[in-house]
Length: 448
Ligand code: GLU
Image (cartoon, rainbow, N blue to C red; front, side, top):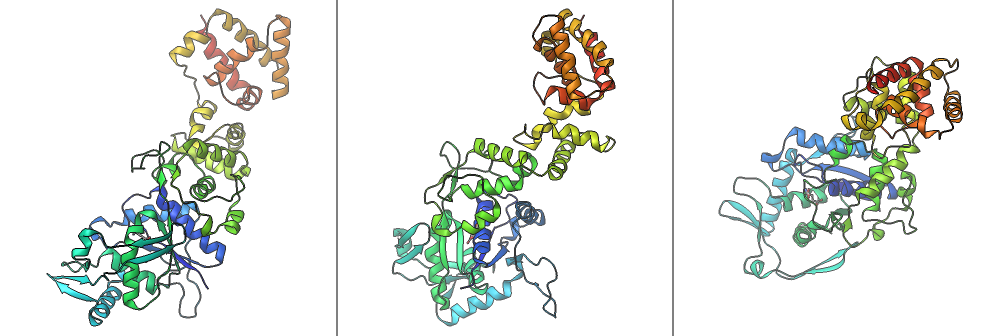
């Protein structure tokens, strides 16, 4: 069987992390089976449907690397591909839905009711054989058993979600519907519609929800709920995709960092976990750190520069070698690229500003004396390299019978404005002699 799956979001102006995971699972299953992955925008609700809402979905999927395979115009007259096709838009398929409604009416399975069209829902229970949830038997609820028929076309002529969703799954030959568990309650209606069209329904796999760390339901405003926030806050797409895989699926050997090719080869529907997944921001940040530190140099630099620019640093006039050397000292130190602004910002400032608390604590006559000796020794260095800088500090400490930290600490604060940061001797080397001397002068002026 050639597997055909789809991600079918409604454009709400928001791509929820649960939706992104649904897209990912569909894409993985298509890649695992050599099947086809379709993107279908369920935009029949014209009121909510805007171009920017669609773009949020498309940008999010592209960022995660989830390319879709097919669309309304996949090829030209010679059958050659014309680039990436699709997605499908339900708003452009009304003729198809109308024809299918006529078909149901002709079969006596749909009828007009107060200007709307209603579907004749079977009264007997429907069994769903879900690939994740297992066997679910749906009986009509008390309210439904009085009148189980439901509207498929509203009185304003708009076809309803259940109808368009099923018609498209049928027309697009979808073999597996992988979607959020919130749709399990709709599935009996969907199966009834498939039966009415005389087509066997696809296999269903309903994925459990993603909950907050504390087990509460994740709402729009909760941390980590929106995919856009990851794009803006310095997460790398491979880390997010890897993390999303682990939310609700398990390779069964406790490994956490998995290359995408390996996930594709191992991913299968029966391993989707049946319990709700809990979102763990700490783990995601750890994974992101792992991906950043093992990232290839040039890619890291590209992402790091754009994170700095996003934070308001203009690096266009800074020599590229300096920028690269500076940002590379932070590569293993950030969990999110957005942290670079505070960690590496000192490299790119002309004048240091020291917070009042730092001034009061770090600059005094004793540290001033150290800085003065550091200044004359560093000024005298011919080769301004990390090794030589370290030797200067060793020598100064030995001469005064004190620990190296007596010199290390004020030097770091003077050069970076902070008591923590990248490796000191390297950062001093990268800043270069004239910048370092300038900063020592600035600090000395504060030492009294
Ligand atoms: N448009 C529906 C949603 O966004 C799709 C449901 C489905 O995947 O069948 O929830």
